[in-house]
Length: 279
Image (cartoon, rainbow, N blue to C red; front, side, top):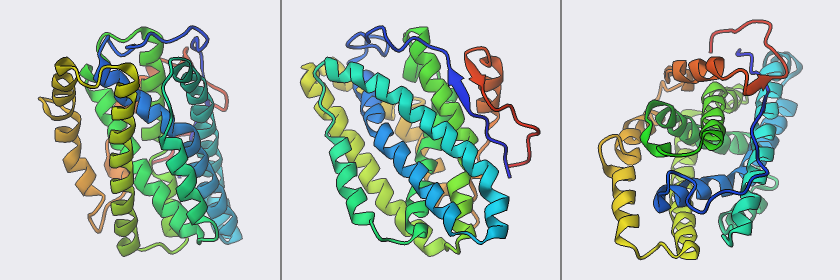
């Protein structure tokens, strides 16, 4: 199992965001704003899934997974709090969070379903966040020109997503999950995540009055499909989840550990690990 460190991010979240905080780019700003809008409820769902899974395990298995699960919960709770503060600025700018309502609707449909379904959905979504995190840590372009505090926020979040990418996946299998359902739930998450992200991005651009500008969509095309673009770079990592022998630990997390080590004065550990176990 892996020791997961809970950190306190030391950045200013009171100063308002500029409208196009991501390097002055309307599309990139709308895209990252959309992601942030999904995080508070999404992170709470991940927390609830891991808690539910942990409670369902036998005492022996619970003891094996408990420390990592608590670290996961602590990290996700911190992400949720920071993005609640971030999203308050978006609300003050007049943006409307429609994604949150769709998440709430789906959560109601999950009531009464077994913990493996919750964990399978969480593991699938965590794969998305982990591969997007790796992209964010590998390329400068997604946050080019962004002020330091917001670069810190997004790369801190990305690094911790990479760090805890195995937790829900391992709990899913500890509860007897199988490959067939893992793939099925991944397809469901892929559809909802990508369509919701696109819909919220477009809605953000509409409220921002940037939707019909040629510069918005030329930037979006470069960001998504250009050299080093998100879709081009992530299709291969996305497909790996469908492999029978896939495990999240197969993804290299060295960039995340390097970033966290280099920024330990800004992302301050509150529960330093006793040791680092292999993922």
